[in-house]
View 1 (cartoon, rainbow, N blue to C red):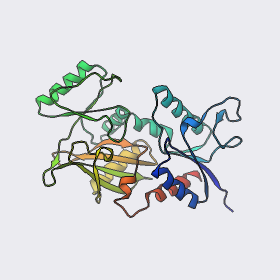
View 2: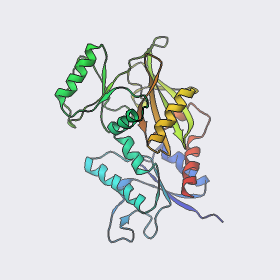
View 3: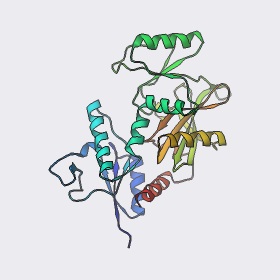
View 4: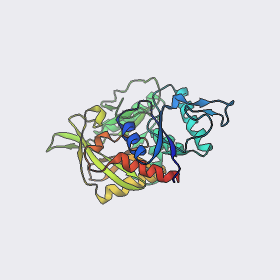
Length: 296
């Protein structure tokens, strides 16, 4: 008889994604604990020097990381430390903490893409507002736009298209600026980008996101449509996922005016609710089975 696996789904809000995973993991005879990383803490009085609800004596076999959660810099750092501790204690993480850290920091992701010759838009990450404005001024002279993104963020929150060098000082004092590939689909009067879900170095599903606004994220009003990824998209998406050793990753791409695809982001904790609407594949089932294989 196979040993029952004790697994944790880490999420700050146990939503549709967590429920889908929980259902599929239970089918695979796992005992599932739904926790948030802020439930856990370092405790040197405990056997393993860590407190995890439901694990007073033993450790979980594996943890599926769905979200890290919002918080201050210190809170986020502490939660990432929990994942480092679990890895040190030989608990399997899906995705690995090193993968998550590299993808969470957009500047590191961009460096890795460019350094490894994977097409990505021109990007600059200065701290000084004066430097950021000079970069935007140069783009404007070339009749191009810059897009400002929070260094840490998701779902398109905080993204701004910067025209005419109008950039204000922000509280974080870091300016992640990327050349905006301003390609509008004239026949549909909409902008679009592409999301590809890679799992175990295979393409699981792909969608195009379209919006009447230039920001196409689903969280910003974009609508998902299924499409068959070309060989070019498959190759660049798998290469991007391998770059951070991801068990699974959401790769975001745009098509430039020359018809070339460029990776704009690698997501190591991607959502897939919108993507699920575009495919007959059970994404949560595929992810759960891949996770379980990693535990063996």
